[in-house]
Amino acid sequence: QMFKKTLNRFNNNKLRSTTKFIKTRQNWKIGDFIQVYSHSKHQWFNAEIKDIKIRNNEKSYIEDFKIVYDNNDCCKFVNRWSPDLRDCVKYNITSSLIKFQSGQSVSVWSNSQKQWINGHIKVLIEKINCVLVKYGKSEKIIHVNSK
Image (cartoon, rainbow, N blue to C red; front, side, top):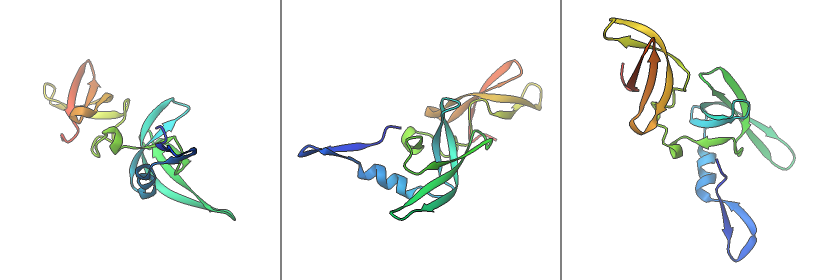
């Protein structure tokens, strides 16, 4: 995510974050869903803020989020103001879709075989709040609110 900055046209030596950007980040709390960038995997992941650690020094305090992502397989601490974090709402990820990741293992009900079959999510289709699941030799688009 690019940092949101404004430039005062009367004083072009001052570059500042927008008020909306600052307020959004200040409002993040434990349990919120955001996105985190993984440098090792070179992609953004849906994540949840599990804890907030505050480090004090003489001049100020620094807040680090404990972030869990990649189907709860990965965890790291990231500073609240890091460019490696971004808001999910801004990127049209619904609260029901945020629980899913490409490659995630899932079970799919097969109407033809009348049983649950193991598969994996190939693609998140955010515009229609669905996932494309591959199971066996078949693929199925499933609305995330389906049971």
